[in-house]
Image (cartoon, rainbow, N blue to C red):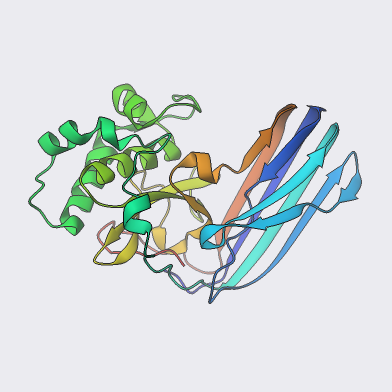
Length: 270
């Protein structure tokens, strides 16, 4: 991971036309070792409001609002001066992150994975093979996938965006008996700039980050949220009511030179 300071920000404008419960996951995960300054401002029709903060596993933070109607403007920024300590492997991780999930339906891939990869190889080598397979099999095409597409849809379509790449990596790794999960991140150097998603896998009792899109160096990633798949890590969600995301913008930079990621190193997100 890089020790250079990183600056990240997100701006969202959401129109609520029917009463809803709005949830955002855009704040940097609060974890041991992390040093940062941050600011979150939310207004409804220009009036400041204070969202409720819910802290979940691995420091993921949900900011929740009950809204009747109106135009919601959200501004978040953070400067990370010291990276978080890498998250250790938990007692239940090998169980939870081997199970099929909504978008990483690994039970559909058992036969395919066994035929595609050499299951006698150690997990570290399988991780490289899976990442290279997904990178070569998919084309990064914004708009090519649907928000409800899972890993099986992505494999058939042969195209998608970062979350689709991550879901396919996660599903294949789980099918090979390697625990894996999805991490939403700020990604300095990402082009096109956006909220980004990568996979993490347990290799030699460590969570190792992999990114089959190769859109940004893994050393500079800043963790936002962590979960089984995008159902756990979406940057915006709502329950009941009606919303429309009018606009959003993401920025993420490193002070100094951007790290070089050859794809060969074992990188842990800090």
